[in-house]
Picture 1 (cartoon, rainbow, N blue to C red):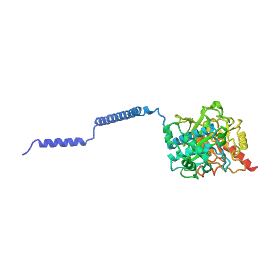
Picture 2: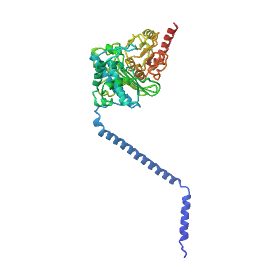
Picture 3: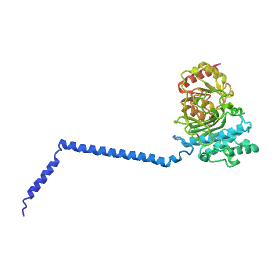
Picture 4: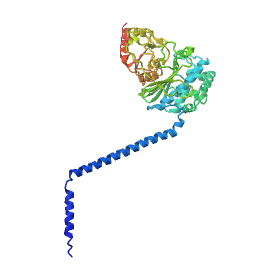
Amino acid sequence: MHNPTTPRILHHSISRFRRSMRPERPNVQHARLRNHFYFSFFLIVVLAFLYSANTRLALLTRQIFVAPFSHHRFPTMSSSAYSNELNIALLAVQRATLLTQRVFHDNAKGTLSKDDASPVTIGDFGAQALIISALRHNFPHDEIVGEEEANLLRENVSLAEKILTLVREAKLADAESEKALGGAVKDMDAMLTAIDAGNSPGGPKGRIWALDPIDGTKGFLRGGQYAVCLALIVDGDVKVGVLGCPNLPISDTAPISADVGTTNEEEGRRGVLFSATKGSGATSRPLLPGALASNPTSIHMKPLSSLASATFCESVEAAHSSHSDQSVIATRLGISKESVRMDSQAKYASIARGAGDIYLRLPVRGKGYVEKIWDHAAGEIIVREAGGEVSDARGERLDFGRGRRLEGNRGVVAAGREVHGRVVEVVREVLGEERES
């Protein structure tokens, strides 16, 4: 049966299809774009609100769960890639300085001879045992280049027992910090084993710690400057450096002099822990008997507008450093101040904090002395991270990947970056004239 409405419905459907195929008029397109804009804006507002709420929630969580414990002093950490290594090195050096200070103040000083004729004290052996024990507890696969060996103690039982007592009694007055270092050395075998663990040959590959338990032994015995020095070298490059300087003033603005830190009235205002990690700058903080001092101070080389106003440091002992050549160099640079002579890597620390400007350690004529890596590794990175340059007498970087000694270098020149090149230039002139004469 014929339905009269069928053609009409069909015609209506075809008309709707044709209209749908036509381009939209401008006002319709604008309306749709406006709707898309409103929707996008609304979505952005919602996301921003959620982000803000999440941030506030995080802050609220921190206030509830973290703030109540913020007064507790835990071992501090750096944000660098070597934060754990730096933290352990700082604590280990701080604990070792407690032993060295006790040895000095109790007059428990004893001197033994070694093949290289340098004195070895009870403090040397004890500090090395403490530091290596902490390193082996935390980094059991790392190698260690240490200055001392335990053969002398195995031959002298009474001295070994005296040192063991001091080592076991040297503890940080903070349980968390002491725990981080592995606690006390267990017994005599553990102490002797730790001392002998510093027998790595060094080299260009791997993680190697360079340790000088008491740098500046003669300064230590005199009550002058000495330093407990520790550095981490990775594939020949120094990454972490720590210097414990018990007799340097805490203040980074204290003037430098040969007798700095040795007077009785300075007691209680001295004792500094310097540190640096590659790419993270250098800092100083007071040496404490327990946890590390919080909020370390960033240190920087002092800007030097004229070399005539510079202060330069050199070693007290003339056996490994040419005082005569260094005097000529200072004169040619226009330096009028008398040099400041002090023992140990405290010289590196002093120029890094701006108390001095230049450190010269030039080879003595006729002697084939080669520097040890533990005498320079920690100080080198601290000066560099404080804005200075360190090189040998030719201007070459110190190479810590050649073994236990700086086989490829002769002499040391440390100064601010803006003057280092000029200092090296004069050093080369003077040493060149010396070879020609």
